[in-house]
Amino acid sequence: IILAEMKDLLSLLRTNINIIPYFCLRRNLFNVKACVMKKIWLATLALYMGVGVALATEKCTPSNLLCDYLVNPLGVDNPHPRLSWRIQDTRQGARQTAYQLWVGTDSVEVVQGKGIMWDTQKQLSDKTLHPYAGKALLPFTKYYWKIKVWDKDGASSVSEVNSFETGMMDIKNWQGAW
Image 1 (cartoon, rainbow, N blue to C red):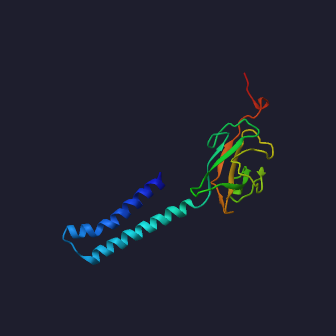
Image 2: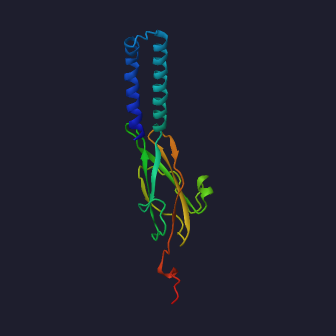
Image 3: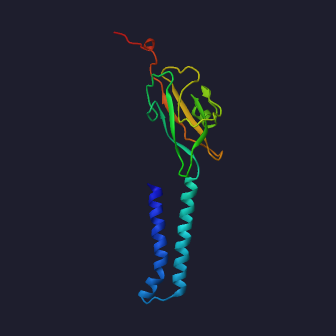
């Protein structure tokens, strides 16, 4: 949405840059210096905003991280939850060429790229859905995870840390008393 709005603004600015001298003449404000300054200012603004949009979307960034198709779910009973993500990249031919997943119980260690429970190392794959294959998950435990992806040019980008919390995991963990 933001990218579309920026494109609309840039096209509006381009149109206005060509119209400014007409407005100056029409309103009997034929001040060449003012018209040129307005034109330069609008061109600079358009360039600055255009470069900002281009830089913001140049990288292949992982987003929409899901665990069993949910955002930060609670009560996951699957011993091998499916971790998935999407790639945000507006460049033509953009694709993921590799990934690395970290899963751990300490969010600080996961931020630092240390996965106590699971570290896939760099996997050359374009998959964006991967079942958990680390150490056995414990019941009633919160796990943190993040993903690092590499794009077609070899540049990497790391996601924010997400989490999931396991549930009972097995009927044996039920502790009811009547």
